[in-house]
Image 1 (tube, one colour):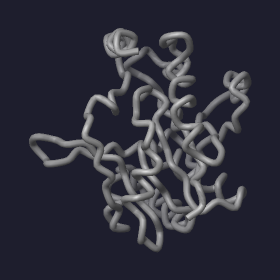
Image 2 (cartoon, rainbow, N blue to C red; image 1 turned 90 degrees about the horizontal axis):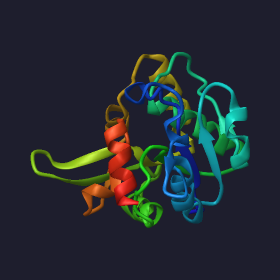
Image 3 (spheres, helix red, strand yellow; image 1 turned 90 degrees about the vertical axis):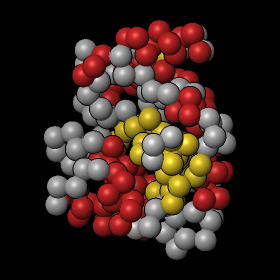
Image 4 (cartoon, one colour; image 1 turned 180 degrees about the vertical axis):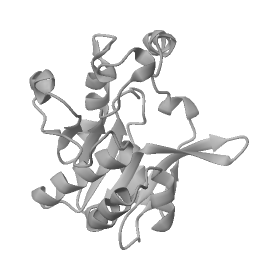
Length: 200
């Protein structure tokens, strides 16, 4: 299997942070987004950013900026679709997504997702961590997605589907289990950002 392309999902509205681009908030020597780029870039064959609105605000990153093709903030799946359409233009078979507000995700995210989906005709896997109540908790913004299913996803979104796991379950999506729950800590509130600063 060819090395996947990477797509950072930054298309959300960050309502709990007062709006704006969560990824551009400062963290350590850089931003949340620069931390995510530093982790994902070495694991993928190329990188793009899924974000809506004026792409110029990300110009200094030097990455392609992909807007959702589905109107009205349709959630992470719309960002996945934008990434798959971009990957199809590049001749890629798969993408791996990561969230722009989750700066400490594993440095072996991509190899472990690939391993989980190893023998699938259409490789599809989500990152998961142990969960006391449910056994595992899936992280729907961290996944391996096949370009071959992009039109199926487009139809599902057009039909009103918004929940990632509903779509991945339809296609027998697998889980790549990561032992460390804290690795997928994401920044939703100012308190979370302070915690991330301490972790960084």
